[in-house]
Image 1: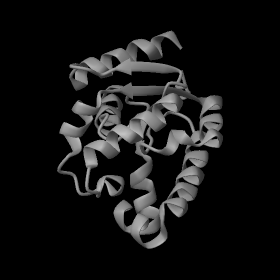
Image 2: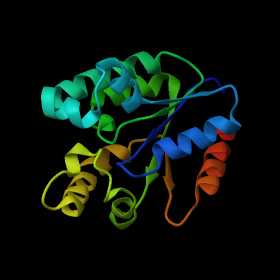
Image 3: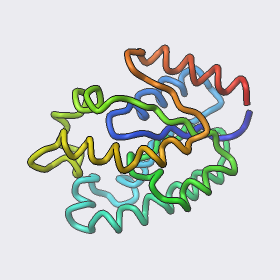
Image 4: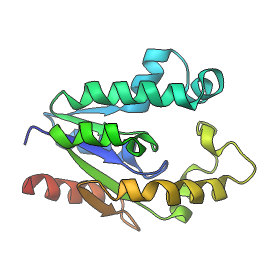
Length: 170
């Protein structure tokens, strides 16, 4: 398989953690976190980009970065939580990528990220409510991924093993 592996899901789903672990096993693949690429390009944090340039600007840059990455090969790409909302992005990823939705409950997601100040969309009065709202809004698009992994009570190694089984079938 030379297609890219794309991990999608809401913030806190484990996309970066799982992607890094997967890249240690799949030595021919390079792990890329889209948010990290954007931070490097812009020279500022995601919260600063949101604050100074707005979410619309961020989404535009995100779409461009994903377009470029989707044309490469042998990448494990961790998308930002909102990236899969773009139909154009989803279409770009269909060509050369296997998309995997890391599905998790709001409770589990919130427990992982509740103290993370690097989540601009959660800097509000009711972050748990906002997370529920985002999941309800975004899940219909996440469910369009090629594969869905219920992360539930699974640890990183179990999730990676499930992805490896998926890759063998491709």
